[in-house]
Amino acid sequence: MVLSHSRKAYSESVYRQTTDSLIRCLENAFQHFGGVPEVLVIDNLKAAVSRADWYDPDLCPKFRDFLKHYEIACVPTRPYTPRHKGKVESGIKYCQDNALKGKTFSTLEE
Image: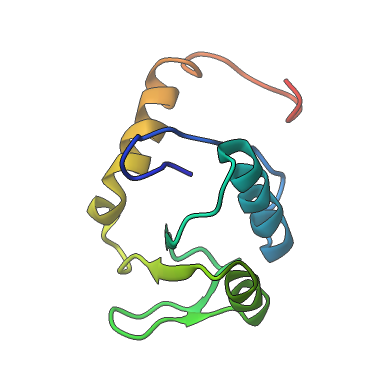
């Protein structure tokens, strides 16, 4: 997760991208930042979006309930448009090119 204005970031590795792991990671990010965002821009991952669409995407019921609980508006990015999440994509590229370059890991803990 990358905060829009400060660009402060939080990341976490998981074995599988499930709805439960997505919700757990987002809650961990909220705790890390000490608050909950009003708007969440997400990728069209299957753990959150059951049907990607340019104009009217469908969210997974469990993820929709999570958003309602925290009173978060959710805006899935348009399919096949990575430019819509430039702040996140540039952070990932930076980590891959610098902190993780040439390293191999056998467990998530490493």
